[in-house]
Length: 422
Ligand code: DSN
Image (cartoon, rainbow, N blue to C red; front, side, top):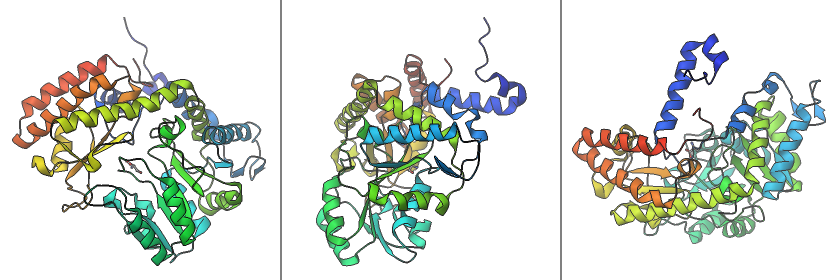
């Protein structure tokens, strides 16, 4: 029997590119994808991303556009906005930011001027480039001051955050980041932002799906602005949203358009609407809680194997592992794991003596494998593969890596991924 081609028009028009897409589909099907910011979107989200909606220019907002022919596009954007407001319980949502970095840049445009002081978590401590880190435009055009985590606990030291905020009086304080394995105390940040007169921005890109599914506390009652991408735990297309109270709506909208961007990517807006609809379902609540249960089970299994986890474990979807004690640099381990069919990224750990391009740790997470239906019962096996692969990385044992890759592919074949051709 000949199976139908998954992308017949693409295969006919551009076989070379179609072949690359097929290769990527195979890679995503056969490997255990554990980069915590990645996921598998549903067929419905994929289809919405590939519609004729992308043929339209729509500068402006529903009912106030600079182009005609918006009869349908306005409805699409209104639907996405209404779903975002309902899901996260916010007064205002802007679904137009192209991705997380432009969304955060819009926040700067709305609330600060070049040269102003802004505050965020240091990148090597788990923050994000756009929270005022030096090599980012946000750290070049603004005076970025940073907080971190305690060396002994791996947890945020709120006394330190308060001290820096009261001394530096930043215009904006960012909380949230890219390598934070623990629950973010939004209320504590809000109190400090109030005391220091700063706008509090909760960047929940990593945990938006957990918040939507009730598996992490919401920043909404505490933060002035909530910034998120839509493609991580939220399981939507690559895009972003800014949410806020009504009092900041005008400033946020003006900053996104015309301040920073041109026409919104309407096909992405549509796919965001679909993802938000999916995220409002009971099944998604179950998913969000399973992501956390899997991460906790994996952390326990890794600790039992003697791995050193930053902060001693996890409360969310993410685990940050310091491999110093294993005598394997993070990059060597990540590349060996990749050859074993387990995809993670190398990552700095707090107070890392090594450089960001060759750091001491790896970062891994459970959003993608949970989307494939893996449960806490699978986590000891996953921990065992990681343990064997890291040991093999140190000794250069390629045979073991090849064996693990076969075992991984076998388990993955029993758990088809959403959105991929069967
Ligand atoms: N690149 C994202 C991550 O992997 O966490 C953050 O923007």
